Length: 113
Length: 115
Image (cartoon, rainbow over all chains, first blue to last red; front, side, top):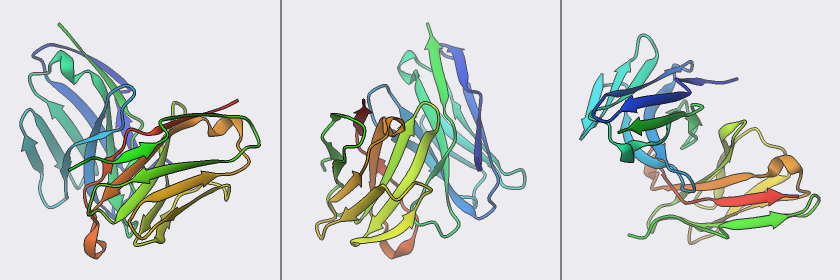
């Protein structure tokens, strides 16, 4: 059972544009929602994370928006750059699961010049 | 601080063999989790160890096992390898004090190919 649904599967954005990736979860006991960035041949790198007590968190060009009632959260990458081209994963944990992360299926982002 | 290290980085095995992968967490981190990444199934949780005890386990067969040592280093073992075990195996470490969820940092992974 997939508990975190991620869309789109792939995304092409022009340099300077805004990249938006969406995730939806089912388990209401999840209480930690990180986003990871992965380049080919590398492990995922933590970008930004949010807990349900806030609706938005911003770090540099990266913003997470969180809608608890809709059980959805999204990553916004402002002023997207070619160096942002990577695969992005949303994830969720909680529900007494220790550090177990349930991942979305990933979004392959390409930022074109 | 040094990041999470995993050895070896690449492995080629044949069906039926067994394999052991190693992970050294970030200094001071006590939790180590293992994930399998494949194109078809994505990132899937295998298990988590904290203070040498398995704290959580994913839905993988018993051929997949792990352990953690007193210095927090961890190993995972896969016995009787199958073709479908070909994957990138990722280790993630976190401080995870007091049972609270904490940030997890991933290593570069071990690429296992089963022939």
